[in-house]
Amino acid sequence: MFEGHDTTASGLSFILYCLACHPEHQKLCRDEVCEALQGKDTMEWEDLNKIPYTTMCIKESLRLYPPVPGISRQITKPITFFDGRTLPAGSVIGVSVFGIHRNSTVWENPD
Image 1 (cartoon, rainbow, N blue to C red):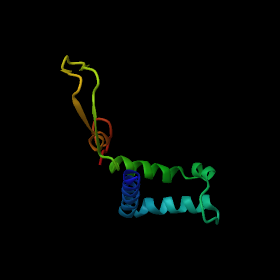
Image 2 (tube, rainbow, N blue to C red):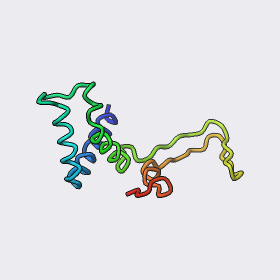
Image 3 (tube, rainbow, N blue to C red):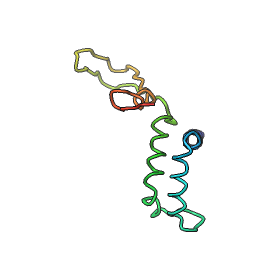
């Protein structure tokens, strides 16, 4: 239960932080949401396709500040990499989600 609440709270906090740092994008998101709501108090599932810019901002915030910045797994069988190096079964592999999301060979402006 903790992880679901913690990651959700972290993700929402960073989305709000990013929008606060970029008021021009915050205004565009607010205008888009207000238009999609059309005076209603709540957003319905079918309204989500009416907020593509807001969705894009949410995804970019999650890329910059992933709620789970790293993961690890234990491999169950040996792995041989393209350069010939190998890892035996039972090795623990760590992956930096934060690092992948800010990789300059993938992202033109990673920060």
